[in-house]
Image (cartoon, rainbow, N blue to C red; front, side, top):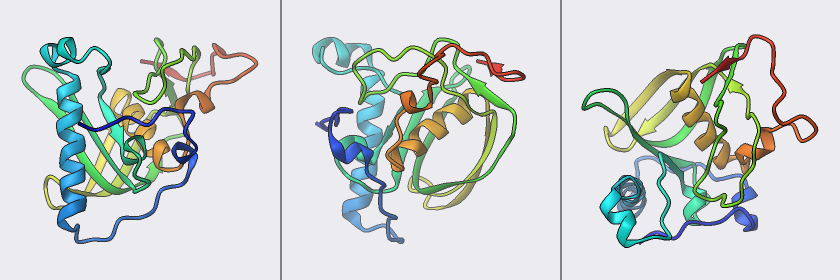
Length: 181
């Protein structure tokens, strides 16, 4: 079972290293284990028998103590559909000037303390990465919630946590033109 690194651990603030491609078996096994863990966190039965485990929709390698540029995302999106990514060396190649934020605020498996406020992010992004599940380079176009999740996880690869993006003096400041999600 993976152990989640908490936000008081210095390695979570370090910039992660690029991953060599093609993936070696150990690295591929790690990203698959990350995905399996993430899916388990969304299983009510599993969580009831493991009360310390919190539900998540994204997980970056630094959160399991590996400062590698890898992340996984998994969550339902509509009837029987899921957003599922296992990305290696993801890079945001374009972003909109228009901003968005989660009205309810962001959360994180590595952050147990509550941090209220708005973390503004680009409303629309394009990410280039190697998808370990598909075994190929991909370009992902995302907007709104999907873009927020991708940016949150990519931030982890640069040692940035969501609450770093909240205005400390005015956490609920409304930016003109920003979209509430």
